[in-house]
Image 1 (cartoon, rainbow, N blue to C red):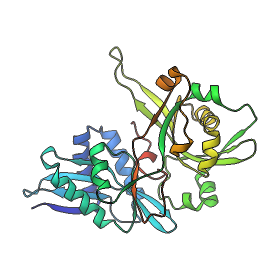
Image 2 (tube, helix red, strand yellow):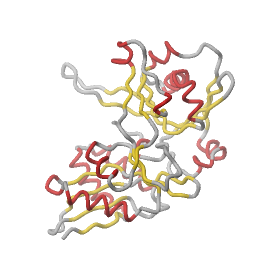
Image 3 (cartoon, rainbow, N blue to C red):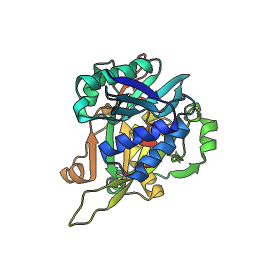
Length: 297
């Protein structure tokens, strides 16, 4: 018999995170950072995820659920960092996922980092793909494609952003998030994002990390689509990063003409973000999700 329960205390959260960290090889700093984030973000809903025990009362699975906030008074829960013990994958994992979905079914649910098997399981439980494509572009590519007109960039405090946008105000944890206002030639846009580090593989015995700016929310996706390389150049310059990661509607992305750019300086991915809701939304920005945490990725 398998016992599944909500993670509702710090002690249970620490036990679950230790299990997940052992499985995914998280270092202690990353694990502690995730715990700290969840303790703040999930106060409103009173739990941090779910944990599964086998018939010998030994943990065989755990999943964390950062609370992203609300949209039109509907809660948004992000399903993340799911790890199952190797001997408990397959049918046991499917039952675990089904239990989780059944217990938070009244909320909008999002998954931003599904592998193929996870995506397949949750799509069988009513999840659908979001209308988005993920792009990672370089400051070099953006500089060569940016517009020549004058534009200005200013930073906003979190309080200013909350006062201006209800969606932002509903996000329970903005600790790592930076807000920017960019005035373009005929319009403007507000952007939320977080500066992260991408850990590269070892090269000649040395490992190093590359800074990246991850856009997690924008005030207008259409304005972003029309000006995104100009916007990304300014964001990279402001955040002092080499790369910017963003979400675009699939129809709004055009691959660079030149092979060198598309091969080395800009990457697009059709890896699905998936979500479950009442059909009213086809995209939920990752503000407040695991992608909003300032972690080494």
